[in-house]
Length: 468
Image (cartoon, rainbow, N blue to C red; front, side):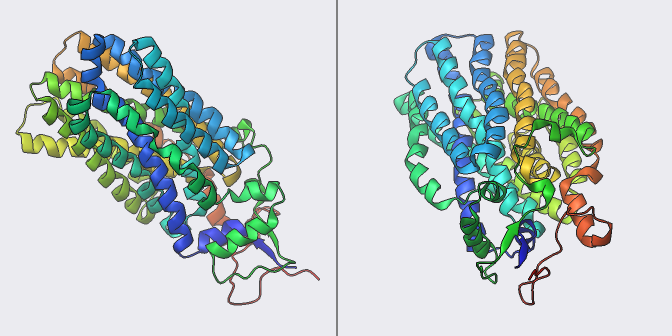
């Protein structure tokens, strides 16, 4: 009987069509998620004018979705480790698509906020699930790159929102960009058919034949046999994934540091995505020019995400991430200073690369830090608690805008969290990460705890474990 570690199988595999399929669907889901998230910031000036709301009220309207995202990330991220990621992802898509569309039907700020809260449950819940899924199935050598490429779809969604917003809002009104958000529900059958289920979940449910078929797609040189026993290391087994495991095995302090880092980065991301258009309009730019800044911000985010992932696979991901936080603090501060428009576009692009891009790399790092069985839970809690920063950002900046402070002070308030986030990342104990411990086990199996992991499997020769 051959005993095969599917975690190691995924780690050592070469990128193939199967990985491309997972990348495609996860990226498509994140594109729609990014669109739903960005659409309010794009339409905010028109919404404020049409519904006659002041900046403080608008801040609360924007934050209603972010408040929903906090709960969605925690509960829908955690529940995925129990019901399976595919169904958790489908639930999230249904929520954020239908309720974003419903927000376009409202004329009351309170009802608008309720619809956005419900949409936020799905927006927040889908992020930890797709990051965990992409992390689980990615080859180790290019894991950070694939996760960040996938998550750059978030910026693509923002770009699509900005491009559609420039044409649709002026022609059909702000409601039109919300109605367009209902399209993803049409893709749910294809997602259920094409997206594989989580490997530890399949093991926990005894769905061994399905897991063998997935293993053969991950590593084409593997030919399933009836006697094969597929398994994962004990720490990766899905056994309810209690939240307390985020604080065991020396991970507690680093878990809190991740929460602080996420809070600070998400504060910057949502402060910019919610108020950049309005701040630039108040600085004298036309609505079209202000929307162009959002477009540049998201293009920068794509460059930052992919570039950050590429660097993270070649250098230490922790220090790459800390450097990106520092760049965020600097670039956002510079936005408050007068400069030629061409240079301003460059700085906006850097701000996108080092805020949205930083959050994407932070997601990749968090996915690598926690064992497979609690990966969605760890990401869900980091994103959920970090959402409190996202919730506060539109409100705090809305109050500052209402006070009519100089533009420089608004951007300085957005930049300060970048410094705090950098310090939090530097304090994370990387030695406690699952990826580091897993690498140590395979570098020196003799030092590994009993049953901690299985040695690498080479399908070009007899398998390492055979029982009569």
